[in-house]
Image: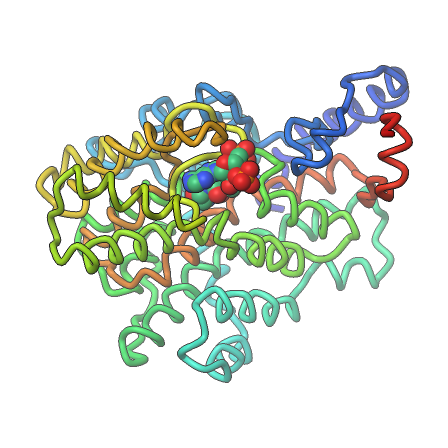
Length: 436
Ligand code: FCX
């Protein structure tokens, strides 16, 4: 057993006991009242999930096991003093609830590089059988499903493993899956956009650095950006579509591949992870229609208004929980201001930021007029040469694996049951509220 796994269960067993005790002794305590409005507006604010990896504050943004993004950038191990933290360190923090050392992070980089060596050939055959024109998220997802032939969890379940031990094969599957996603994503990227000129992994590199390398970007600058991208997209507490779906499907004791694949189908929706690609389409359409790469701020304002008037959302703006500018947006803007202050796309992102919040406020209905993570991530990638928009959501997905799959291990440590909320008919709701 590797030492991280040993540490996990040493921490996990008492936590699982605590959850059981809490439920047994306080199970009948009322924690919240739910209004009809909450049910009809997508369960906003309804507390119904136990998530340990991260927590989202509407004003302050995401905290991973209590640490904000600026704190993580300071405290998580980096390869170089002026670099970005390694996503391996964030995984360690989310899994074990404590900050890793340099050695812990090195162990994970090496462990994942080793595990990534054994992707079965049929996974690549499955990708190759899908047309290249299919969206990368389709190719990514069929590959994830195809990898489930390797599921430790399914094998252990069929062999009759005691359910208290389910966390163990789940951990193994999650580690395998996370280790392999960069190879899969880079394969799809090179297949679709670089004429199948594949690049072998370099096992001496870190997980995100290796992804940049296999995509064909070997500069330290792109690797640094990739590390940042992989850290900030990793988790956003439990109720967002990709996290909730992964957890829900996992609650049926589906293996990590099935569960994560389900989450990725949710990430591919335009109101969730696909927004990063749609922001780029929106900016491109603006430049096309205006016939210039550098529109005036007034032109940007008019274009945004036109988008709203035509009944469309402005991608990259708004959020179901956040009520301030997303710190994941801010950290990317700081990064751009530091390293590529003159990039034309970043200038455009800033112009949009200048005018869109005010326009959204004027609608009188948008609860959060501020930018989210997707408002800038594509422009940043594009400014560094990763210009192929359709891969942006897939890269988001590679990162999201870190959080949602860590939580899946914890779900099995806690021994959480199959999820089954209650639904009601319209008549029931009408009667309940006394509708006449
Ligand atoms: N542009 C135009 N209208 C918007 C808007 C936007 N950016 N954001 C919200 N609205 C509208 C909603 O469509 C809704 O209109 P309706 O009453 O006519 O149906 C109204 O404002 C109230 O919605 P609100 O409560 O503020 O927002 P929701 O919680 O329902 O939705 C999302 C949140 C994120 C889905 C919404 O703000 C949106 O569609 N944004 C654009 C897409 C986007 O950027 N998604 C990425 C989000 C996130 F960061 C991620 O998951 O990656």
